[in-house]
Image (tube, rainbow, N blue to C red; front, side):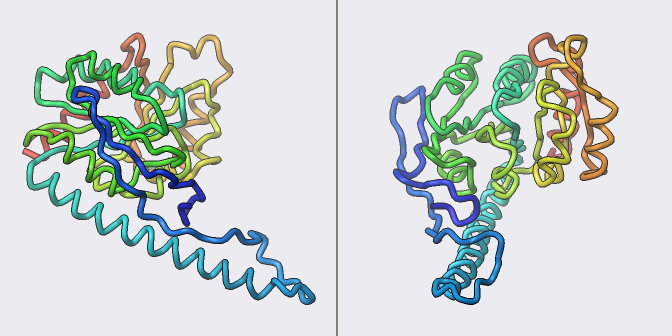
Length: 274
């Protein structure tokens, strides 16, 4: 069990290359921690109170070790990507925000300008990887099993399978989750959070760690705004409360509204590596 978020690592993660029909297995290197009372209350006559405190201390120590180990691998990934002038973009969101649809449109728009490849993260299936492969883009799938996020070791293995060329862009579509992916550095250059107008304008306040980690926030599905009670100004204000540095762009991945602003943002960041 992951000491940081509690997700199970049973069976490990699988890196699958849909074009080669084989997979690479490796185990998630997370420790296993005991559950403890999150209230932290001391019960004077509880004979298990001391054990609970010890378990809590052990959980914190395991979390620190997990994140420190992850950060070490992330630093190695970042160096490798930087040496090859590869721009790695970590796409994070809740399920159903439109990440894969946005990637399909982006690949078709920018794939002819410079090489693009994708690492797909999901608990199971290769559905999204097959959608990406249909665009002609190189893709590998990482299935995390019961895991709720990608980590740096998974990205390391995926990059080895993907083998992206120098001076290219790698998009990492993280597991749909607004909590744990924000905690794990993968070695990426940029973090993009995709938010759908169907999710509610208060999400930055409910999930501050995710939005605080973002370099860019994409407000997707704006074509649905006439049919929803979504306050864009309130969303912008809430985002500003947790992250004043992140840019905010509005778009529709299905219709293409606002997509050119997204492409321009990517071109500017890719150009900075040259």
